[in-house]
Amino acid sequence: MDARPIGIFDSGIGGLTVMAAIRQALPQERLLYFGDNAHMPYGARSLDEVRGFSLSICDALITQGCKLIVIACNTASAAALKDVRARWPDFPFVGMEPAVKPAVEHTHSGVVGVIATVATFQSDLYASVVERFSQGVEVLHQPCPGLVKQIEAGELDTLRTEQMLRGWLEPMLARGIDALVLGCTHYPIVRPLIERIVGAGVRVIDPAPAVARQVARVLKEKAKDAADSATGSVEVFTSGEPARFEAMMERMGLPHDRVAQALWTDGALRFER
Ligand code: DGL
Image (cartoon, rainbow, N blue to C red; front, side):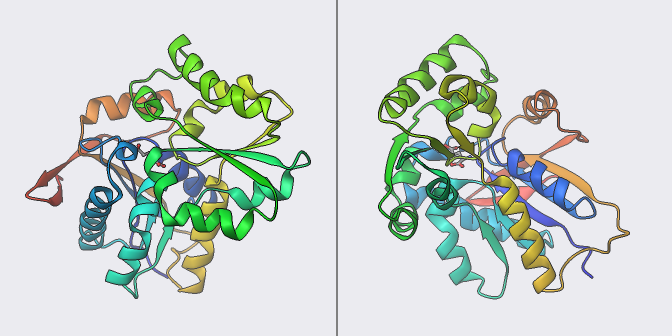
């Protein structure tokens, strides 16, 4: 039994969609969440830069006593998962990868779509997922520049967000997709709008529940899970504005305590308690 927290991070509020799934699957666990809003959006940055942030964040979460880290951001996973595993070989990390496999298993039309950030599509991780799992199915990929910022600004159901999404999704619909992978953890926050645009004939796939199951498996395997009788908790930090972050959590219907400040100084991250 291990009562230490699970560390979870993203560039902002996106990873909260993964945190919610982990909370549901593992209510007895303590969760420590960090949103790097000072550097958001990651998807418009170089993979090198995102790798640097991710290594420093993992360093800070390990110093905080975390027992496992979930990189709840596709862009950061694509940029840094290999590197964090190389730097801390005995420490368990769980990352995100675009859910091409379930999309390929589902499709009847033989065409599936993936939406993600520009940086994610530039990564070797994405190329390797498509190579391993596409099996003759056509995989269309569509970057959505600006969508993460739109979501962070709270524009979850505005005309502008709908127009942006239509511009990206309608061409994929015209090419016959019947499955759409949400390859960025921010995108499930606008899932109702996405579903309205693509209609009932397209299965929308969010890998968060599968990631939560993977976290549970790894904890069990390594005997690092909390006691079933333990009381879980959630502690949230942002390098942006805590009040804004709190307001977004509220809109997402996520129960929370006060969101606290985390600060970058000289490339190192510090949690203020
Ligand atoms: N949630 C991040 C992802 O999954 C968004 C990256 C960004 O900040 O652009 O890719």
